[in-house]
Amino acid sequence: MDNNACVDIHEGDRVQAVSSSGAPMSQCAAQLWGGDLVMASDVGYWTAYTHAGSINLVHFTDAGPDQTIDGAGSADHAKLVHHGDAHMLLAWESGTAMSAKVLDGSTGATIGSEITIDVPDHNYQAFKAYQDGSVAYPGVGRGDSAIRVARVIPC
Image (cartoon, rainbow, N blue to C red; front, side, top):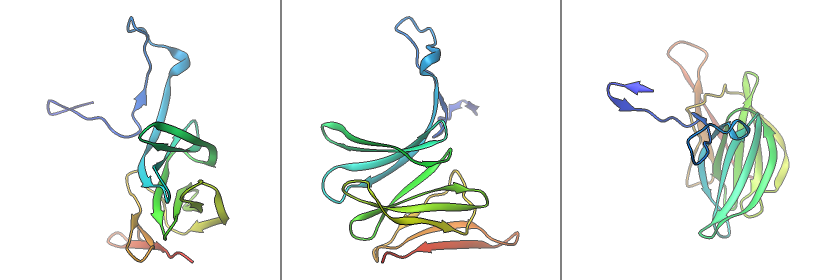
């Protein structure tokens, strides 16, 4: 994308793998959304990405990826944020609201049941983690000049 002689590369841009000769490899075409990076509660990091409508999680250390959780949810975009002392919150668009679930920060296992957050999702908005362990998300308000802040407090 040309933007005043600058090149814009956006999270979610289409990725096309090419062979060593530069020819497109159709079996490797994909559109990936991701970018949230959360420190694991033990060692390493977690990231969430989406591919073909499936939310996937990857844990990695300095040695590379060592755990993958496929199908953690269904959406084209996901949000991952540190939540509480040893957890993460994974959220995604679900109709006019968001769905979310709490995950173990070490194993990625789901804790409890899925919750609904009554704020519309936006692809370029993110949750913010706070020192008290809560997370907040700024969403569109009910009027032209209003915002709604959804806050998820750890138990």
